[in-house]
Image (cartoon, rainbow, N blue to C red; front, top):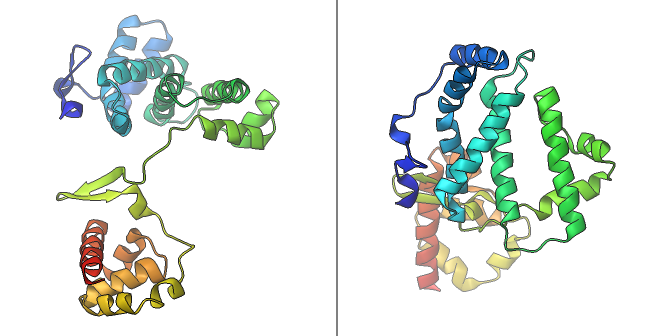
Length: 257
């Protein structure tokens, strides 16, 4: 599969080294003192972090080399702006910096058109967020960002939501032994009601054909509006098993109806 390739931007990712927290701290200190070799070692020693982050964006089918390069820009910014005086792990600071850089790249290459004013507000909010993180080494609240750019909180939220890429409900979020769990499986339906199901005699008859465990899952999932994760916790099996049993039960019910 394309996203499992080893060679990215001329780097053999299977041979990437990792650094301990102590090594990172020492290299960060030397880098701040102007040691360019330490800076390079620190960047190279955190490329696995970039690699792990870009996997989150593989559903976009963007060029992996491009995403890796953009992620490295975020890593370099994190290295150069990290504050050693604050008690924060480097990775804790670097991850949102890398993700922010990738999202900015995807936003600028987004085919969905967003108004110029909303895009400008979002860009200012992102800049303010980066500035806050550079100074405080932690995520700012919406209120803090709004105050920094002189905008109302609702405008900041609306503009940031506008640049977030749409996600398919059928996007796989987890795999276990070949069983995929999709985004829609993580959501509960608060609009469903018992009446909409119980009114159908055919549906009730189809339910009787299911095993006791399948009936329990269908009842909890659609009558009680619980997520697969909640069901898995209550009946003591994995979410992937719940997903598989639910799909099998629904397929048999459709054939009955």
